[in-house]
Image 1 (cartoon, rainbow, N blue to C red):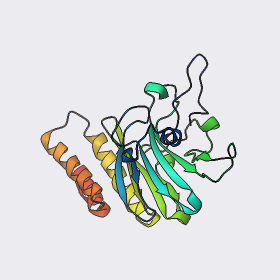
Image 2: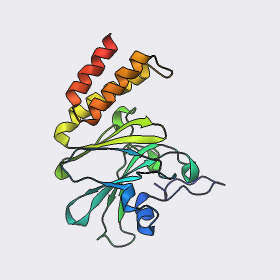
Image 3: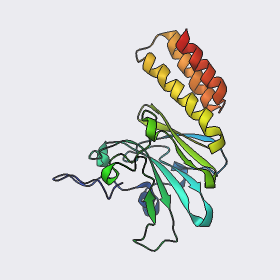
Length: 211
């Protein structure tokens, strides 16, 4: 993403998590390691800012791996035309200059990767699935400056996405400032989601929308 978006009279955007990890600017403690087939949640800080968690790494076959990062138009990334989760496919065995790092473009019809990020609020960009690797990645809601991400399996992804979208509907229905009951409802749904009980979460949120 950092090599594609440059505006005239503006500095280039920040570098990727791949480069920052290689330079030692991101420590191992700031990268969540998730194996294919596992389900995990992370709240990623914007890559251009300091934070406890800055990337998710998912190992693949042949030393390849995915990196997931949160790109927001702040700091060195302020010139980015888009925001959300960026997914990188890294192949360390590729010759330099021949696709060591490839962006998994969320919207392949957009020119110059201008809508490359995955976002829960975009119907055609709210999930990434690699069935061969048994990996699904779902962008979630913001928690302060952090952006949530769910790593799961393709098998579980449909229920997970339905639950995440229902939570988004709840937060849209009850924007801040919320009443005590609305806050408790959303907190309970989010907690249920983070326990990976997606069907119960969906039912709870759906009931809250009907009440």
